[in-house]
Every structure is written in C-alpha cells, then in structure tokens.
Image (cartoon, rainbow, N blue to C red; front, side, top):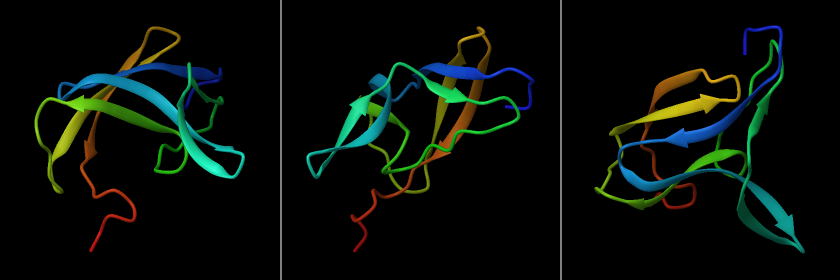
Length: 98
C-alpha cells in the first residue's frame, strides 16, 4: 500500500474455482485450522504478505486441474472500490513435495 490511508482487501476472485475466500490460520487448542476472514488489512505505506500457514487466498472447488508452473489470475477488491489483478504462480502445497 503506497497510499497514506490503510486499506483492506475485502474480496478475491479467480476464473478457475467456484468459490474464492480470504483465509488465515489459527491455533485452536493446539490444532492449526484455516478460517475465513472478512478482510485483510494493509496499513498505509505497508504491506500484507499472503503465504501458506498465514493469510492466504483459498480457492475452493477447482473447475480445472492445475499443475506446477501454471499461473492463475486473481482479482483483489479493496474497501475503497479499487481492484488489482495479479498472476499467482501454482506451486506444490507445503509438505507435499516428494
């Protein structure tokens, strides 16, 4: 966020899944669980890092198979109405590599 005001990502969308949600991981009694969040805040002059085991975009019920090396266009919508489309690389899930 290069602006002088905090912004929030309030929606994510992509063409390869039936549903897309903003998620985080929580520790629930010693068990790590993924949970949806309403928004991801990005402080003024700051950044939010989306990564496995933390804040992330969850693609649910894929319409097409994906493989490592593909990329997925993801459109992020912010609380100020602006949008940003980026290409996210498809990578193996952590712990799934041989």
